[in-house]
Amino acid sequence: MSALTHFDNTGASRMVDVAAKEITLRTARAESFVTMQPATAALIRDKQVAKGDVLEVARLAGIMGAKRTADLIPLCHPLGLDGVELQLAFVDDHTVRIEATARMHGRTGVEMEALTAVSVAALTIYDMCKAVDRGMTLGPARLLEKTGGKSGPYLAK
Image (cartoon, rainbow, N blue to C red; front, side):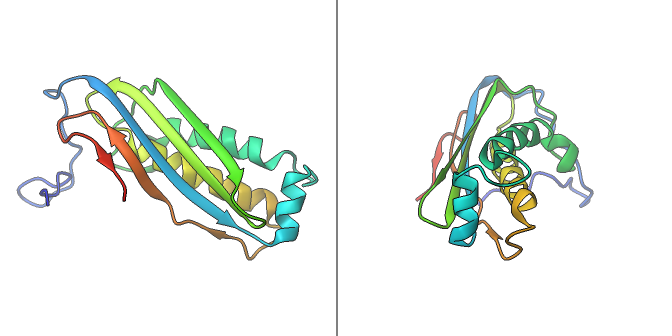
């Protein structure tokens, strides 16, 4: 296991200096889930939620969240993302699976951007549907895959 990189030798927090790292294509895929009552899922599928098309609003929110990751996570680098894509789909009669892919050419990875995207999308689904189902659950959220950089590829089991 690697040493924690967000602390200096005195234990103070720091933003990792990536200036000497090579620019490579970095990608990351993450997923999360929102579990709800089947009746809530039917409202979403039938586009009957009063606030609008839940999955499309969640997709936009996830993209926006990825772009704002450095504003939310204190030691994340602000990144110029090349692309962020979200797929949202029902996996059964009461669960939405959210998958995000983030990519860019840069000196640091985009794992946090992909994870932020799925988390913000899940929160958006909750926000849009909470009037009819306050018992929804979010997660788990996890990194599925990452490529690029010195540490090489990662693929979840």
